[in-house]
Image (cartoon, rainbow, N blue to C red; front, side, top):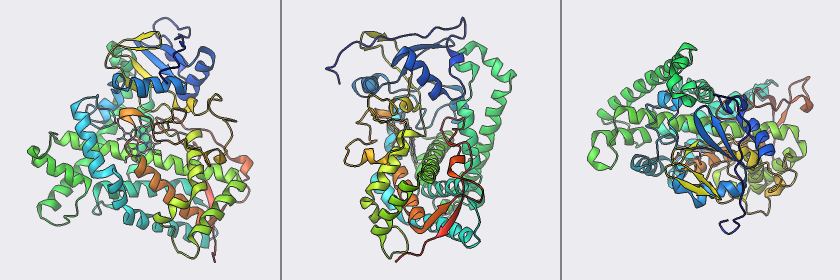
Length: 477
Ligand code: HEM
């Protein structure tokens, strides 16, 4: 808190001429930065190319940046990948702090992400969950292995697409999304020379990275244009009036007086794209890690299955009203979010004003990286931090809503993830059903000791390997 004003010195790890500390980011930056912080302390000033960048790796400091001085640090740097991919950062996640961002955030919350909206999507989630169960039942009846990773990915994708685009969204179209989103995550995490040396942007062209970004953006643009054209036609004819998020955006574009937001086509495409990107990969990553962790811990698996089976006794589906009672399942999800936060470095921040943190003056336009991954493994805050122990969250008030700075998988402050409830409801419902109606085993010849928990490279942190399992239908009663 603000009272404990012991001064934490800022340290700068030794740097190389010209590139500064850039070479120290490694291929998995949250791990590399964690190692640096162990050696140099929780407040580091790195020189990434020509940009001073502050790296924050303790809960106390995260609180300083994201609560006590959140108003200084609520903007985002204008980085190359989002500039190309999101129409010059016209989306909610990378828009600079200001009136456009504020109005857009209000709009997205009230028309897509609020509690009320999330509840309104319950029938849609129930439908997609039942399709998922059917897929696994079919595999079970053939005694075959199924790619749980792929099934969960297309499930999260379907839920999000239906919520954003309504029921008219064509399956052939939405099937293209998961792979594009993965690729997007990788492209976001590439090192673009222009982001560190603005005068050397031509090197990105030379090395082909800029071309990759352009081609990627064109692909999405084509898809989004097709979808928007279809919406315009169908709303024009007055059918399918069920209001969904896309139609709301299109109406706003037609009637700009109805809101403080002036939306052009590019804004709409950027907004849709970030919802798909931010929504799918994150939620899906948690589902996948959870199944992987449970497969390695049969005792925890059995315990959570018993909990859920006891709650839903005799019913054919776990429903959302059951979820309030699934304490152990919730604790498991929290523990997965602690050990495998899908966005381990949150999203980058940038200071809008000069600001003093402890004794250190942080000038305007400094980039800030918060290592949420390191913070949620800090032995100052967590006992046996490397161990998967959901029990730590039973009878414990710590949660992910941005008030407990030792645990910030969704960020905190003004920029906290607005999709938290959308995500957790989807995740809990899917897991509860998978764990209730199936037992899971490894395909022949594979043991839990063989599980490879290596992380993949990308702005979101998924497991590298695909999870293949054999579902076994469980007859309850
Ligand atoms: C387990 C799932 C999810 C996790 C762990 C997660 C995590 C995060 C994090 C760490 C941030 C950055 C916060 C900061 O800078 O302090 C963020 C921002 C954001 N998330 Fe999520 N997210 C999840 C699901 C979702 C979903 C389902 C949606 C939408 C459908 C969504 C939409 C967004 C948006 C639009 C932002 C940018 C907010 C802003 O800059 O104002 N997220 N999320």
